[in-house]
Image 1 (tube, one colour):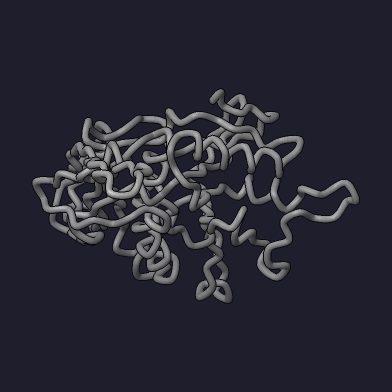
Image 2 (tube, rainbow, N blue to C red):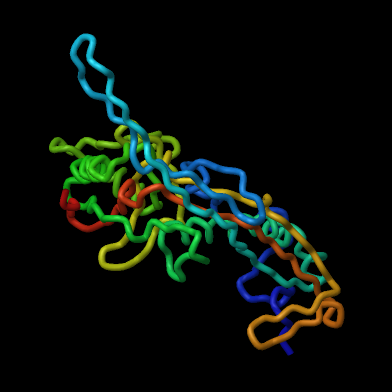
Length: 296
């Protein structure tokens, strides 16, 4: 009878003794949103984030004339923390006999939380976890295929038209491939980046953050986002929490697992996080379609 995952008979694991100390795993994942947006302190009950909806305007005046008075206008958005979590069960024997692989899996649990956060902010399937959590999935789209440089300029212009200043790019690996393959009329690369790392560190003077969480397949495929990240805020109630138990009973679908009875244990990772943006018009989606510049 096959054991319950994850155990020593789990398929997809084929390590020789010589390989047991060397784990080939995916590249490190860190949240692009958390690299680009502003962090605010988020208490458990949430926090009201002030939003500037109108800025003061200056006027020209003649000598000795009264100076004009202008006031900014404000609004507030409530940012609430929502919990993302994952539980992975293991057999005690798996931890004992495949320790290197076990440690690598546990190390990657926080990355799973960061990936889910990015996927949600970027409008992935499932939508926002609640009403006080913004997503960017409804932002206007700009295609990068064909004349890639013109597409990037169009994205910059779209953010400016929406009232923002483009100061960051969240790019998928697919977007990086498209950019590294873009050439001028003489066949020379437009974006050389770092030849050693294959990166494109900046675009139009703004920094880039690479993330798998931003990609979404479709017609067209979504490759990334560009925007004014000064108008985006995220808040974390607590840093990521890791808990291990061998006494609990966990529910996996319709199956209940008594960990103690089965000589198993489970690792739980979770964190509470919120996200808000001042104005969705400050962001655009980047796709692999031919250029589709939003109407002004």
